Length: 389
Image (cartoon, rainbow, N blue to C red; front, side, top):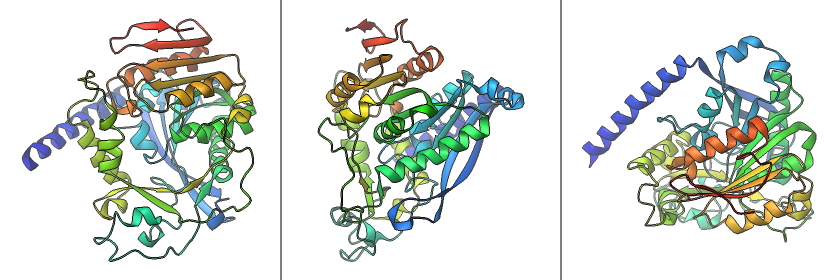
Protein backbone atom coordinates (compact mmCIF):
# COMPACT_ATOMS: atom_id res chain seq x y z
CA UNK A 1 0.00 0.00 0.00
CA UNK A 2 2.77 2.54 0.76
CA UNK A 3 4.24 1.82 -2.69
CA UNK A 4 0.87 2.29 -4.37
CA UNK A 5 0.28 5.52 -2.47
CA UNK A 6 3.75 6.79 -3.44
CA UNK A 7 2.98 6.02 -7.07
CA UNK A 8 -0.33 7.84 -6.77
CA UNK A 9 1.37 10.91 -5.32
CA UNK A 10 3.99 10.81 -8.08
CA UNK A 11 1.23 10.68 -10.69
CA UNK A 12 -0.53 13.60 -9.02
CA UNK A 13 2.73 15.57 -9.01
CA UNK A 14 3.19 14.92 -12.73
CA UNK A 15 -0.37 16.04 -13.43
CA UNK A 16 0.17 19.14 -11.31
CA UNK A 17 3.22 20.05 -13.39
CA UNK A 18 1.21 19.54 -16.55
CA UNK A 19 -1.64 21.64 -15.17
CA UNK A 20 0.78 24.43 -14.23
CA UNK A 21 2.29 24.35 -17.69
CA UNK A 22 -1.20 24.57 -19.21
CA UNK A 23 -2.02 27.56 -17.00
CA UNK A 24 1.16 29.31 -18.07
CA UNK A 25 0.22 28.61 -21.67
CA UNK A 26 -3.05 30.40 -20.97
CA UNK A 27 -1.07 33.33 -19.48
CA UNK A 28 -2.68 32.95 -16.07
CA UNK A 29 -0.75 34.12 -13.04
CA UNK A 30 -1.25 33.32 -9.36
CA UNK A 31 -0.63 36.11 -6.84
CA UNK A 32 -0.70 35.51 -3.08
CA UNK A 33 -1.15 38.41 -0.64
CA UNK A 34 -1.66 39.11 3.04
CA UNK A 35 -4.24 41.84 3.62
CA UNK A 36 -3.68 43.71 6.89
CA UNK A 37 -6.88 44.05 8.90
CA UNK A 38 -7.71 45.57 12.27
CA UNK A 39 -9.55 42.67 13.83
CA UNK A 40 -12.93 42.78 15.55
CA UNK A 41 -12.54 39.19 16.81
CA UNK A 42 -13.16 39.70 20.57
CA UNK A 43 -9.95 37.90 21.62
CA UNK A 44 -7.78 40.26 19.55
CA UNK A 45 -10.13 43.21 19.07
CA UNK A 46 -8.26 46.25 17.73
CA UNK A 47 -5.13 44.27 16.88
CA UNK A 48 -3.70 43.67 13.42
CA UNK A 49 -4.34 40.31 11.79
CA UNK A 50 -3.39 39.10 8.32
CA UNK A 51 -6.02 37.81 5.91
CA UNK A 52 -4.61 35.55 3.20
CA UNK A 53 -5.89 36.23 -0.32
CA UNK A 54 -5.02 34.39 -3.52
CA UNK A 55 -5.65 35.84 -6.98
CA UNK A 56 -5.73 34.07 -10.34
CA UNK A 57 -5.97 36.24 -13.44
CA UNK A 58 -4.89 36.46 -17.05
CA UNK A 59 -1.74 38.48 -17.66
CA UNK A 60 -3.56 40.43 -20.35
CA UNK A 61 -6.14 41.61 -17.84
CA UNK A 62 -3.44 42.84 -15.47
CA UNK A 63 -1.75 44.75 -18.26
CA UNK A 64 -4.98 46.60 -19.01
CA UNK A 65 -4.98 48.01 -15.44
CA UNK A 66 -8.26 49.89 -15.59
CA UNK A 67 -11.51 49.71 -13.68
CA UNK A 68 -13.42 49.66 -16.96
CA UNK A 69 -11.64 46.46 -18.05
CA UNK A 70 -12.35 44.70 -14.74
CA UNK A 71 -15.95 45.83 -14.33
CA UNK A 72 -18.26 42.85 -13.87
CA UNK A 73 -15.36 40.38 -13.99
CA UNK A 74 -14.03 40.38 -10.42
CA UNK A 75 -14.97 37.39 -8.23
CA UNK A 76 -14.26 36.58 -4.57
CA UNK A 77 -14.62 33.03 -3.18
CA UNK A 78 -15.32 32.44 0.53
CA UNK A 79 -14.87 28.95 2.01
CA UNK A 80 -16.85 26.96 4.56
CA UNK A 81 -16.47 25.55 8.05
CA UNK A 82 -13.25 23.52 7.77
CA UNK A 83 -11.67 23.55 4.31
CA UNK A 84 -9.72 26.79 3.71
CA UNK A 85 -9.83 28.66 0.41
CA UNK A 86 -7.19 26.81 -1.60
CA UNK A 87 -8.40 23.37 -0.54
CA UNK A 88 -11.97 24.35 -1.44
CA UNK A 89 -11.47 26.26 -4.68
CA UNK A 90 -7.94 25.82 -6.05
CA UNK A 91 -7.04 22.13 -5.86
CA UNK A 92 -3.83 21.76 -7.94
CA UNK A 93 -4.91 18.65 -9.84
CA UNK A 94 -6.16 18.51 -13.41
CA UNK A 95 -9.38 20.56 -13.72
CA UNK A 96 -10.27 20.58 -10.00
CA UNK A 97 -9.66 24.32 -9.58
CA UNK A 98 -12.87 26.36 -9.79
CA UNK A 99 -10.70 29.48 -9.54
CA UNK A 100 -8.62 28.42 -12.54
CA UNK A 101 -11.72 27.73 -14.62
CA UNK A 102 -13.14 31.21 -14.08
CA UNK A 103 -9.74 32.84 -14.60
CA UNK A 104 -9.36 31.09 -17.97
CA UNK A 105 -12.85 32.41 -18.84
CA UNK A 106 -11.60 35.97 -18.33
CA UNK A 107 -12.47 36.70 -14.71
CA UNK A 108 -10.13 38.18 -12.11
CA UNK A 109 -10.58 35.58 -9.37
CA UNK A 110 -9.79 35.96 -5.66
CA UNK A 111 -10.23 33.62 -2.67
CA UNK A 112 -9.69 34.43 1.00
CA UNK A 113 -8.97 32.52 4.20
CA UNK A 114 -11.15 33.74 7.06
CA UNK A 115 -9.53 34.43 10.44
CA UNK A 116 -8.68 31.05 11.95
CA UNK A 117 -8.09 29.21 8.66
CA UNK A 118 -5.31 28.28 6.27
CA UNK A 119 -2.69 30.99 5.89
CA UNK A 120 -4.59 33.72 7.72
CA UNK A 121 -3.98 34.61 11.37
CA UNK A 122 -5.17 31.98 13.87
CA UNK A 123 -5.36 33.76 17.24
CA UNK A 124 -5.63 31.51 20.33
CA UNK A 125 -5.62 28.37 18.15
CA UNK A 126 -2.09 26.96 18.54
CA UNK A 127 -2.61 25.66 22.08
CA UNK A 128 -4.36 22.24 22.12
CA UNK A 129 -5.85 23.15 25.51
CA UNK A 130 -7.92 25.67 23.57
CA UNK A 131 -9.77 22.89 21.80
CA UNK A 132 -13.42 22.66 22.81
CA UNK A 133 -13.92 19.89 25.39
CA UNK A 134 -15.59 17.42 23.02
CA UNK A 135 -12.65 17.77 20.61
CA UNK A 136 -9.90 17.42 23.21
CA UNK A 137 -10.71 13.73 23.57
CA UNK A 138 -9.61 13.30 19.93
CA UNK A 139 -6.04 14.38 20.75
CA UNK A 140 -5.60 12.50 24.06
CA UNK A 141 -3.13 10.95 24.78
CA UNK A 142 -0.95 11.71 21.74
CA UNK A 143 -1.04 15.52 21.94
CA UNK A 144 -2.49 16.07 25.40
CA UNK A 145 -1.80 13.67 28.25
CA UNK A 146 -5.23 14.50 29.64
CA UNK A 147 -7.98 17.11 29.09
CA UNK A 148 -7.10 20.64 30.20
CA UNK A 149 -8.81 23.97 30.74
CA UNK A 150 -8.70 26.43 27.83
CA UNK A 151 -6.63 29.58 28.31
CA UNK A 152 -9.31 31.50 26.38
CA UNK A 153 -12.77 30.43 27.52
CA UNK A 154 -14.96 31.77 24.70
CA UNK A 155 -15.98 31.10 21.10
CA UNK A 156 -13.52 32.81 18.78
CA UNK A 157 -15.34 34.46 15.86
CA UNK A 158 -18.90 35.64 15.20
CA UNK A 159 -21.20 37.06 12.55
CA UNK A 160 -19.90 40.61 13.05
CA UNK A 161 -16.19 39.75 13.03
CA UNK A 162 -16.52 37.55 9.95
CA UNK A 163 -18.49 40.24 8.12
CA UNK A 164 -15.66 42.64 8.97
CA UNK A 165 -13.04 40.17 7.65
CA UNK A 166 -14.89 39.94 4.34
CA UNK A 167 -15.46 43.69 4.15
CA UNK A 168 -11.74 44.35 4.57
CA UNK A 169 -10.96 42.04 1.63
CA UNK A 170 -13.82 43.32 -0.53
CA UNK A 171 -12.66 46.92 -0.05
CA UNK A 172 -9.07 45.90 -0.75
CA UNK A 173 -10.10 44.24 -4.03
CA UNK A 174 -12.38 47.13 -5.05
CA UNK A 175 -9.53 49.57 -4.58
CA UNK A 176 -6.96 47.27 -6.22
CA UNK A 177 -9.07 46.78 -9.32
CA UNK A 178 -10.84 50.15 -9.43
CA UNK A 179 -14.39 48.77 -9.33
CA UNK A 180 -17.44 49.68 -7.27
CA UNK A 181 -18.86 46.17 -7.10
CA UNK A 182 -17.59 42.60 -7.19
CA UNK A 183 -19.17 39.15 -7.59
CA UNK A 184 -19.04 36.67 -4.71
CA UNK A 185 -19.23 32.86 -4.40
CA UNK A 186 -19.63 31.01 -1.11
CA UNK A 187 -19.64 27.30 -0.31
CA UNK A 188 -21.27 25.87 2.86
CA UNK A 189 -20.17 28.15 5.73
CA UNK A 190 -19.20 30.59 2.99
CA UNK A 191 -22.92 30.81 2.28
CA UNK A 192 -23.80 32.15 5.73
CA UNK A 193 -20.67 34.32 5.79
CA UNK A 194 -21.38 35.92 2.43
CA UNK A 195 -25.14 35.88 2.88
CA UNK A 196 -24.78 37.89 6.08
CA UNK A 197 -22.30 40.18 4.33
CA UNK A 198 -24.43 40.73 1.23
CA UNK A 199 -27.51 41.47 3.35
CA UNK A 200 -25.51 44.22 5.06
CA UNK A 201 -23.50 45.56 2.10
CA UNK A 202 -25.51 44.99 -1.10
CA UNK A 203 -24.06 48.19 -2.61
CA UNK A 204 -20.69 46.45 -3.03
CA UNK A 205 -21.97 43.27 -4.71
CA UNK A 206 -22.90 42.63 -8.32
CA UNK A 207 -23.94 38.95 -8.39
CA UNK A 208 -24.01 36.22 -5.76
CA UNK A 209 -23.50 32.45 -6.13
CA UNK A 210 -24.17 30.07 -3.22
CA UNK A 211 -23.16 26.42 -3.12
CA UNK A 212 -25.16 24.73 -0.34
CA UNK A 213 -25.20 27.37 2.39
CA UNK A 214 -24.98 26.03 5.93
CA UNK A 215 -26.74 27.44 9.00
CA UNK A 216 -29.78 28.93 7.25
CA UNK A 217 -33.01 28.78 9.24
CA UNK A 218 -36.08 30.95 9.29
CA UNK A 219 -36.00 30.55 13.08
CA UNK A 220 -32.51 32.00 13.60
CA UNK A 221 -32.51 35.06 15.86
CA UNK A 222 -32.25 38.52 14.31
CA UNK A 223 -30.06 40.03 17.02
CA UNK A 224 -26.63 39.26 18.39
CA UNK A 225 -26.64 37.48 21.78
CA UNK A 226 -26.21 39.59 24.88
CA UNK A 227 -23.43 37.35 26.22
CA UNK A 228 -20.94 37.91 23.39
CA UNK A 229 -18.36 36.42 23.26
CA UNK A 230 -20.14 33.21 24.07
CA UNK A 231 -18.59 30.98 26.74
CA UNK A 232 -16.70 27.99 25.37
CA UNK A 233 -13.28 27.52 23.75
CA UNK A 234 -11.81 28.93 20.53
CA UNK A 235 -10.89 25.85 18.49
CA UNK A 236 -12.38 22.74 16.89
CA UNK A 237 -10.74 20.03 14.77
CA UNK A 238 -12.05 17.74 12.03
CA UNK A 239 -10.45 14.32 11.55
CA UNK A 240 -10.34 12.26 8.39
CA UNK A 241 -12.89 9.83 9.85
CA UNK A 242 -15.41 12.65 10.16
CA UNK A 243 -14.53 14.96 7.26
CA UNK A 244 -13.69 12.44 4.53
CA UNK A 245 -15.24 9.12 5.54
CA UNK A 246 -18.49 10.21 7.23
CA UNK A 247 -19.45 13.67 5.96
CA UNK A 248 -18.27 13.11 2.37
CA UNK A 249 -17.99 9.46 1.28
CA UNK A 250 -20.71 8.39 3.70
CA UNK A 251 -23.25 10.45 1.73
CA UNK A 252 -22.45 9.19 -1.79
CA UNK A 253 -25.30 7.06 -3.15
CA UNK A 254 -24.41 3.53 -4.20
CA UNK A 255 -25.81 4.07 -7.71
CA UNK A 256 -23.48 7.04 -8.28
CA UNK A 257 -20.59 4.69 -8.89
CA UNK A 258 -18.16 7.15 -10.49
CA UNK A 259 -19.15 10.30 -8.58
CA UNK A 260 -15.78 10.38 -6.80
CA UNK A 261 -12.60 9.75 -8.75
CA UNK A 262 -10.48 6.90 -7.29
CA UNK A 263 -7.70 8.28 -5.11
CA UNK A 264 -9.29 11.72 -4.74
CA UNK A 265 -10.24 11.31 -1.04
CA UNK A 266 -6.66 10.33 -0.23
CA UNK A 267 -5.32 13.28 -2.21
CA UNK A 268 -7.66 15.75 -0.53
CA UNK A 269 -6.65 14.41 2.88
CA UNK A 270 -2.97 14.83 1.95
CA UNK A 271 -3.73 18.44 1.04
CA UNK A 272 -5.46 18.86 4.42
CA UNK A 273 -2.09 18.29 6.04
CA UNK A 274 -0.44 20.92 3.82
CA UNK A 275 -3.06 23.53 4.70
CA UNK A 276 -2.85 22.89 8.45
CA UNK A 277 0.55 21.37 9.28
CA UNK A 278 0.08 21.95 13.01
CA UNK A 279 -3.38 20.39 13.10
CA UNK A 280 -1.92 17.42 11.21
CA UNK A 281 0.21 16.63 14.28
CA UNK A 282 -2.65 16.70 16.80
CA UNK A 283 -4.05 13.28 17.63
CA UNK A 284 -4.57 11.34 14.42
CA UNK A 285 -4.38 14.62 12.50
CA UNK A 286 -7.01 17.03 11.28
CA UNK A 287 -8.04 20.48 10.13
CA UNK A 288 -8.48 23.12 12.82
CA UNK A 289 -11.22 25.72 12.66
CA UNK A 290 -12.41 28.49 14.97
CA UNK A 291 -15.56 28.15 17.03
CA UNK A 292 -18.27 30.47 15.74
CA UNK A 293 -21.28 32.31 17.15
CA UNK A 294 -23.83 33.12 14.44
CA UNK A 295 -27.13 34.94 14.28
CA UNK A 296 -29.31 36.60 11.67
CA UNK A 297 -29.01 34.19 8.72
CA UNK A 298 -32.80 33.96 8.45
CA UNK A 299 -35.76 35.17 6.41
CA UNK A 300 -35.19 38.77 7.52
CA UNK A 301 -31.64 38.73 6.17
CA UNK A 302 -32.59 36.81 3.02
CA UNK A 303 -35.18 39.44 2.12
CA UNK A 304 -32.41 42.05 2.18
CA UNK A 305 -30.51 40.21 -0.55
CA UNK A 306 -31.61 42.01 -3.69
CA UNK A 307 -28.68 41.22 -5.99
CA UNK A 308 -29.00 38.48 -8.65
CA UNK A 309 -28.44 35.19 -6.80
CA UNK A 310 -27.89 31.59 -7.90
CA UNK A 311 -28.09 28.70 -5.41
CA UNK A 312 -26.71 25.24 -6.26
CA UNK A 313 -27.06 22.12 -4.09
CA UNK A 314 -26.13 18.47 -4.64
CA UNK A 315 -29.14 16.18 -4.52
CA UNK A 316 -27.46 14.10 -1.78
CA UNK A 317 -26.79 17.12 0.42
CA UNK A 318 -28.70 17.25 3.71
CA UNK A 319 -28.84 21.05 3.30
CA UNK A 320 -31.22 20.79 0.33
CA UNK A 321 -34.40 21.77 2.20
CA UNK A 322 -32.89 24.70 4.09
CA UNK A 323 -31.47 26.05 0.84
CA UNK A 324 -34.85 25.76 -0.83
CA UNK A 325 -36.24 27.83 2.05
CA UNK A 326 -33.44 30.35 1.51
CA UNK A 327 -34.24 30.50 -2.20
CA UNK A 328 -37.90 31.23 -1.49
CA UNK A 329 -37.01 33.92 1.04
CA UNK A 330 -34.53 35.87 -1.11
CA UNK A 331 -35.56 39.46 -1.75
CA UNK A 332 -34.32 39.45 -5.33
CA UNK A 333 -36.57 38.48 -8.24
CA UNK A 334 -33.52 37.52 -10.29
CA UNK A 335 -32.76 34.14 -8.73
CA UNK A 336 -32.16 30.57 -9.87
CA UNK A 337 -31.97 27.29 -7.93
CA UNK A 338 -30.10 24.30 -9.39
CA UNK A 339 -30.23 20.77 -7.95
CA UNK A 340 -27.25 18.67 -9.10
CA UNK A 341 -27.72 14.93 -9.59
CA UNK A 342 -25.23 12.44 -8.10
CA UNK A 343 -23.55 15.18 -6.08
CA UNK A 344 -22.93 15.60 -2.36
CA UNK A 345 -22.06 18.57 -0.18
CA UNK A 346 -18.49 18.10 -1.43
CA UNK A 347 -19.24 18.32 -5.14
CA UNK A 348 -16.23 20.65 -5.56
CA UNK A 349 -14.11 17.45 -5.43
CA UNK A 350 -16.45 15.25 -7.46
CA UNK A 351 -17.29 14.48 -11.09
CA UNK A 352 -20.19 16.95 -11.11
CA UNK A 353 -17.88 19.88 -10.31
CA UNK A 354 -18.08 20.75 -14.01
CA UNK A 355 -21.75 21.65 -13.46
CA UNK A 356 -20.69 24.20 -10.83
CA UNK A 357 -18.13 25.68 -13.15
CA UNK A 358 -20.38 26.08 -16.17
CA UNK A 359 -23.45 27.26 -14.25
CA UNK A 360 -21.53 29.84 -12.22
CA UNK A 361 -19.82 31.15 -15.34
CA UNK A 362 -23.14 31.57 -17.15
CA UNK A 363 -24.65 33.35 -14.14
CA UNK A 364 -21.69 35.66 -13.60
CA UNK A 365 -21.58 36.61 -17.27
CA UNK A 366 -25.27 37.21 -17.87
CA UNK A 367 -27.34 36.87 -14.68
CA UNK A 368 -29.18 34.09 -16.46
CA UNK A 369 -29.15 30.28 -16.47
CA UNK A 370 -30.42 28.25 -19.39
CA UNK A 371 -31.84 31.45 -20.83
CA UNK A 372 -33.80 32.38 -17.70
CA UNK A 373 -33.18 34.83 -14.88
CA UNK A 374 -35.46 32.96 -12.46
CA UNK A 375 -36.70 29.45 -11.75
CA UNK A 376 -35.80 26.09 -10.25
CA UNK A 377 -33.86 23.50 -12.25
CA UNK A 378 -32.50 19.95 -11.93
CA UNK A 379 -29.57 18.46 -13.79
CA UNK A 380 -28.94 14.71 -13.91
CA UNK A 381 -25.63 12.88 -13.69
CA UNK A 382 -25.80 12.49 -17.47
CA UNK A 383 -26.31 16.23 -17.96
CA UNK A 384 -30.05 16.27 -18.70
CA UNK A 385 -31.42 19.64 -17.60
CA UNK A 386 -35.03 19.96 -16.48
CA UNK A 387 -36.92 23.06 -15.38
CA UNK A 388 -38.97 22.24 -12.28
CA UNK A 389 -40.81 25.56 -12.05
